[in-house]
Length: 337
Ligand code: TYM
Image (cartoon, rainbow, N blue to C red):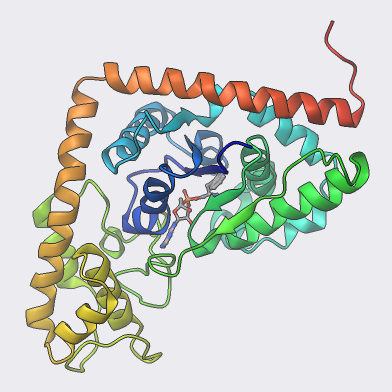
C-alpha cells in the first residue's frame, strides 16, 4: 500500500486571499510530507461564471506560482492545471449521467451564486460540483483538505461515488471509485470578511477592502486592516457571538503571528483597537513577505514554473487516466482498439 492520497485545488479567479491560504493551501503544505499530494489550479471551474479570457491564463499561472511560494514542493507533490488533464472533463460527463438533478439544485453555493448572476446562470454553474467530484475521484483521493464552505460539495462527491457509481456499477469487493473524506481543520477553516464578521472572506465580494490578498503590498494591507470593522468594546476575546469581527481578527492574529490562540488571547485581552490593529498589520505583512518575494521570482523567470507544471501534468495524467478507464469499463463503454 502506498501513502494515502490528497487532492485539492483553488480557482484562479483574481488574487487568492487569506481564506484560501489559511483554510486550504497551508494545510496542503503540511500534508505533502506524509501524503501522496496532488494539487491543481481549477481553471475549468473559473469559467462557470462570466470571466475575462485575456486574464485567465495569467491568473492560472500566478495561482500555480502561489502554490509554490506558499511552500508546495514539487519534489514532494504534483502541481498541475486542471484543464490540461482532459480526464477531468471526461469523468465529469460520465458522472453527470448518474447524478440526480435535484442533488445539484440544493447546493448552497449554487443558490447563492445563481442569485448573484440572475439571468446569466450557466449550466456549468449548476454542474460545478459534479466536475469537482470528478477532480477528486480521479485521483482515488483519501483526503481532501478544504475550508468549511466546501463541505457540502465534498458530501456530494462521496454520495456520487458511493451511491451512484459503486452501488450500481461496482461490487462490494471491487468498488469502482474510492470514497474520499473531507479534511477541514478548525483553525482557519472559515476566515471572515474584514467588513462583516458574519460573512466569509470571498473573492467575489465587490468590496476589495473586505479581503487581504496574498499579493497585496504592505501599505494596502495596513490600510485594509485599519479600516476593518470592529466594535466599541475594549479588549479582544474569542467566542463571543456578539463580537464576530473580534473573533475573526484575533483568530487571524493568532495564526499569522504564529503564537497560537491561547497566547494571542492573553496578549490582547486588555488591548484597545488602536494598539491591536498595527500589531495585526505587522504580523500579516511579515507572514506574506516571503511568499510575495518567491512569487515575484517565479513569475519573472517562468522556466521553473513551466517545468513543474509539465511534470505535474504527466503525474496527474498517469493516475487520472487509469481511474477514467476503470469507470469507462464499469459503465460498459466500448474499449478503444
Ligand atoms: P475556492 O477557489 O473558492 O477556494 C479555494 C479553497 O479556499 C477555501 N476558502 C476558505 N477557507 C477559509 N476561509 C475562507 N473565507 C475561504 N474561502 C475559500 C475553500 O474552502 C477552498 O478549500 N470548489 C472549490 C475548488 C475546487 C476543489 C476541487 C477543491 C474544485 N475542485 C477539488 C478541492 C478539491 C472552490 O471553489 O474553492
